[in-house]
Length: 265
Image (tube, rainbow, N blue to C red; front, top):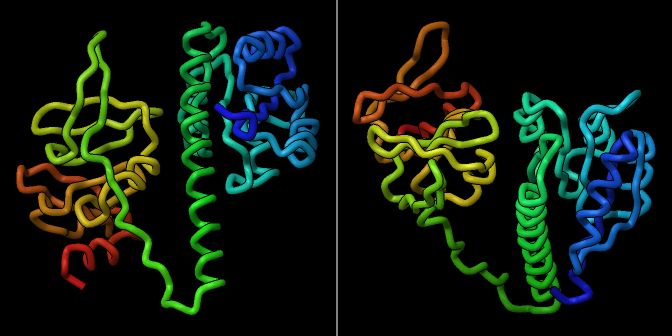
């Protein structure tokens, strides 16, 4: 990684030993700069606004202001890539709900830390590449009298790597019937089998072809050509029945968009 792409990291934890643990692990990584530390939520907010780090290691449980409250104060859309640290894994679901890149359950080992850092680095690099491309296209459009440039067709996932029972395998996207959320994981449903992958539903939705897959609920993504019927369920809710008989819930806010996607609008 070149000097311009070094990761600027902020470490936030009210426990000195916990901060030192992360600092020591970061010191072993050549292309990372520790730009600051904070021991309270208020210090974290001030440091994020002043230092503009690329990545924040953020403790969940802190006195006065929690890690989640730090995100709320900054705003999820303005928050740097974030890896939450917590002593309780039940916070993991909420961590992903507020767009965490990953979370670490204390005490964590070196390998798990390296995995989380690698995950964050990939997200940051993809985000930076997208922002650079957008700025370049905007600049070209401003300086050209030609019609607006049409962006090249986006590449979507055609396979997803999953791990289980010490084995890794690749699931072709073309084989996936639907996807459901399961805590910090997503489950890929292929026929009568399910494969867990550590990925957020929003991230999967962005990586899948919207002409093929549709997110019908915050916890369900379904293959459009497998939908048999859309019907009103009990209590005024909606559901789809797949061609294999499986029924899945439909959010009321997504029903009209789903009808259009199915050609029913």
